[in-house]
Structures are given as structure tokens and as C-alpha cells.
Length: 136
Image 1 (tube, rainbow, N blue to C red):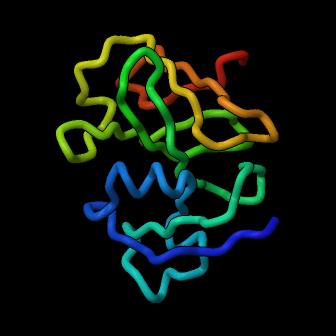
Image 2 (cartoon, rainbow, N blue to C red):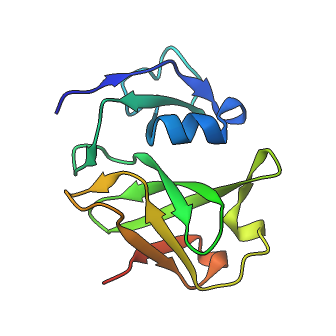
Image 3 (cartoon, rainbow, N blue to C red):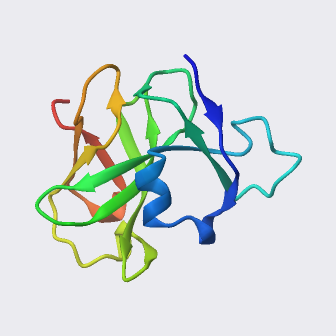
């Protein structure tokens, strides 16, 4: 796979525009940059069009179906789930566990996963902070 890393940013600096422009981010430790940045920094992955098992914990951009909200969450390829989900609301990130959204919440990946476009996930319990592949 051909891709490159963009400029790392701390979590508080990453915006909705950032995650819409670069739909996959990695923790700096996963990108091999752990000595250069704090643990809570992420780096955009540029030129990646499909998520595979190559990464341990990529952070992917999601659309919340039935709303105009954008979300971001860590994706576990082996378990086919997303977790640590935050939504962009009122110009900042809000953890899904603190949101007023009612379950079930349906998410759609804005990047291909395993060659599939618009991969859907469903969350039935906000407090568990996990959404599973729709057809699991």
C-alpha cells in the first residue's frame, strides 16, 4: 500500500475539516513517531483508500446515519468494531457516551474497509462505547 503521513496534531487541534480531508489517522506511536510527540497526538494517513489489517488501531472518519453529524473512532479490524467514538458538535469533539443521541446509532465509514465502501456499524449501548459491524 502506498501512503504517507501528514503533519501530526494533538487531539484538541484536530477538527471536523481535518478528519473529512484525511479519513484515517494513526496514533503517533503506531506511526513510529512516539519519541517525537506526546502519546495523545495523531497523524493523518495520506493516500490510503482502504483499511486492512495492516494497522493496529487506525482512527477512522464516520458519518452518523440519519443526521448531519460526523464522528471519529478507533477501528479494530480483527474484531470488526469501532470504539472510543467522538462526534463533532458545536465546533468541538464530544464523546458519544455524553451525547444526547438515542440508540441504536448507525455509523457509516467514509473510507473503504476490506474493499467495501460505506461499511456500516451499529451501536446499541452508548455506555459500552462500541459499535459493531452491522452484519455480525
